[in-house]
Image 1 (cartoon, rainbow, N blue to C red):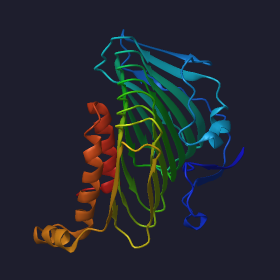
Image 2 (spheres, rainbow, N blue to C red; image 1 turned 180 degrees about the horizontal axis):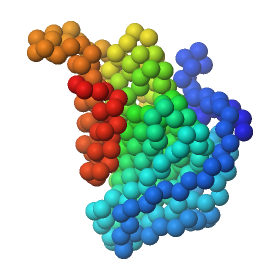
Image 3 (cartoon, helix red, strand yellow; image 1 turned 60 degrees about the vertical axis):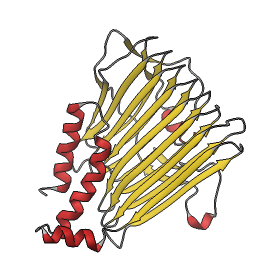
Length: 356
């Protein structure tokens, strides 16, 4: 199957010559392989089943409707729900172990019912130096006073193409938290769309990445504020090495009627090579007067002062760079509430960074 499509289009287009309005995906793949997650952490307060029809609010794919044809090749969705008034301290873990030359699509819906809390960790792994394609779609629905904590970890082989689409809807006083760790793959596309529908709904996201060699990372975050006093906070941090490329688009959209809403997006990028390509486009759209929106970006190389300090303590430049790059990732890894997942990431980073 030949796939040629755009994805990750920003809501308000900018100049075409910047080549920031959208991403492009071109590859040939079968989408024919079947995969089901290894599931652990299910308790009496949580149920799961594979379903072809699920009664939740309609959500557009985080990557955009242009990718619907990819996800529609799979009729079944893994539906995970928490009972009303339940608090689940043990995370549900979905682990997808991909084989060489595999081509898979998976879909999940996570539904936190009224006054409930649930944590789900989704891990994509493969052996090093493997090739393949993975497309994963996750939709979150948090009812009144509910909380969803979603963690996505990508540790794929260095020739994988990875599509990751996340959409969420939050009702009154509901909260969704999204944590991403992106370390593997040849090309990775991250699309996130959050709708803060009602009063005091909340969305928080943190992403950490390392791009090296000729890796490409394309990200598009869009949070729509509809509810009064809704809040969002987005953070992206990572390191670019060698000839890698990264594109980040982040849009906070204050809709009419969302008075008292607060939005903040921050980016921190470390550049360790003159041949990397770094593109960033933070956007705030506003159709409401009584709101607060902020965005900021810290982009640069290691300062001479830091390098001198490291050198004075016998730390070589390349080791110092690895220490700082790993620390950026570690600050987000520390948010993951599962020791085994953290250990898996640490082991992967040991292979990437080597002995420091």
